[in-house]
Length: 633
Image 1 (cartoon, rainbow, N blue to C red):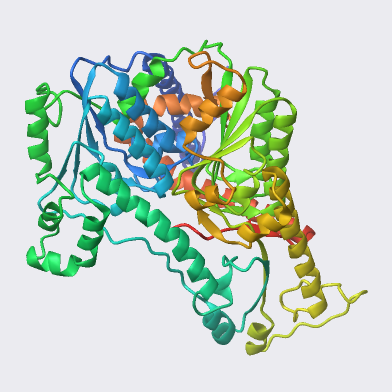
Image 2 (image 1 turned 180 degrees about the vertical axis):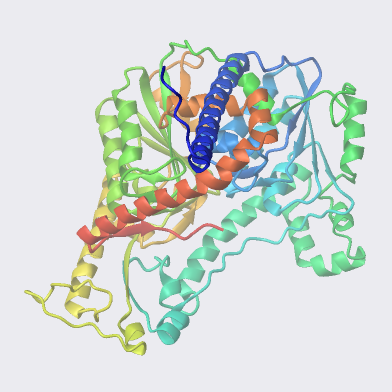
């Protein structure tokens, strides 16, 4: 009979330690495994339950529109990131899509269960006046339908006030204020700091008397031409703003302007009370706290003890979810596609919220190849960017038309420079009178750090096989002959730009040059000069495109063509927006961990890859033309 092997005490200790470690390892693995299974079960249950998670509306419901975040044409973050951020209450990067705001207002106009609208603009960050005027028009139509609009805010910027003014009644917190100040555009100028302090010489190559995008790098103050051009279109936009407010509040533009001019005296007379001053100026109808407004709406509507504010209501996000359930996914009607081109124009593939020469062109190509799409609306909100990327997108517009599909452009707040380049070949161009457009001009810019390095005692020297080898190295003095090459490229870019506009707009190159030269126009001024065809927003552009495709009203549907989210992203979005997901991600703290540790690292990695790609392209093309406009507020 074999006797068991007896270990010495030291060996037994280490064997026992190993057994404990091995047991702990297996226990942790099992916990992780079963925890993962439980999470998957929760995810699956949440997604299954989400379809029935939207409560039905009751009669006499108040729609509370309190959008939070920046007003945008298209979300800049993916659905998963948005859902996770919302679950944990991260509001730093919140966005509100213009299309969602418009469809909620338009639906409420016809919705018999919506009795009135409470408009709370405290946390809305408007972008430009064109998109605001589109929302204002929708609010006007809602009010004209007989639905009451009550606006309340603790404070209002002049951009927010344009929307609040459309309400039947505007209430302001007694400690709040409304200050209308006018439009201004001021930039920092770096010439002295760059050239005299740091020794960086910036070489600017441009065509266009008014092309002022790069002036801050070569001047200490705005040029006379830049000031002239800016004040021309800004005055036009401002006078329209005054007119819109005056009409909504039953005042005159002169009254509002006088109130601004005498603001110091008026506020002093009101004892420094901004809310009282706003009331005296008839900008608001009364001073009430949020609780007092809630009491007012409770008295007018239906009391609801379960609601935080005391009256029967539906919030903005829930109402959008309601609207989504009303649309059948099996809708087989022909389509008018909307492709959004928002942000700066860059080469290659770009994420949503920006424009990529390849990615945006691919969306237009998808619309061309889809037999159910009969017409396309290109919604443009862009200051421009790279010329070649702009040309890639323009070519796809031309190909769409060649395929027999009408293309109509709807300009948003800004469609200038490269933004106009991608628009010019449309069958028709719509813009709001306050859209910023034009800026038909080209520039290129090369910094030189030779003097900077000299100050540090660093010098560049070497040899090359030709006089131009290494000529674009910014640590070497720029050869005048190289400057001549760059200017020739910029000249060609301008000739291409004006030539293509002339052909697309059926005008002579000379006529286009007169309204080009890098000058910026308001939408109204652009229409007067033949750069825009008609006034209107996305709705008018869609109707026009449908008519060109011979589609009858009600017999087609509108579809936004966007880069599809991955199945995982759709799954995670469904989970994060469910009640179970909100609990798991918010209360359990899982999303905080993901956001704090995973996403910043991912962002850093993506930026690194993006920068590497850009550097590689820059190395292959030392001379790059830009069609960009720094012409926002």
